[in-house]
Length: 137
Image 1 (cartoon, rainbow, N blue to C red):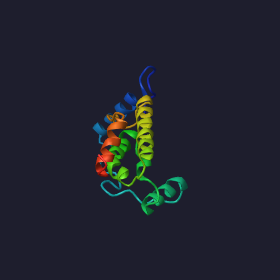
Image 2: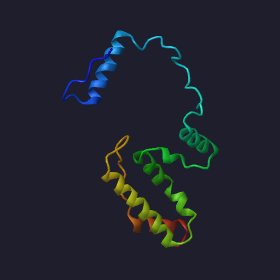
Image 3: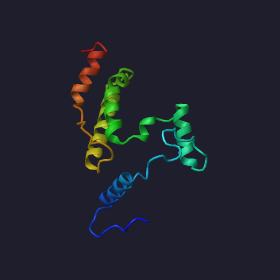
């Protein structure tokens, strides 16, 4: 039986200490299933199974499962290809402004996952790059 969490100790440090002590005792050695893949979804969690099925079928954006600190840099990386398909400058500006708003919002919220290092993009610079890519520069 585990001891109760001492008053004033954070839950995370207390749990980490409990895990470290169990590892030192060898409690995690030779467990059944060690080194084997996780079993497929059972159907008991309908929401998770639905999301996994939709992601596998390709009609759900997989970045929706990621924290902003991982999805936003990927979106910035893919932005030139996305903008290459856009015909109107107004739409390019809207896309970049929307991305910038989400970057600012992610910085304003508590971070989930690794820290977000992306900064808002310069709209005018992005539009100029878009024009150059279209041969309008």
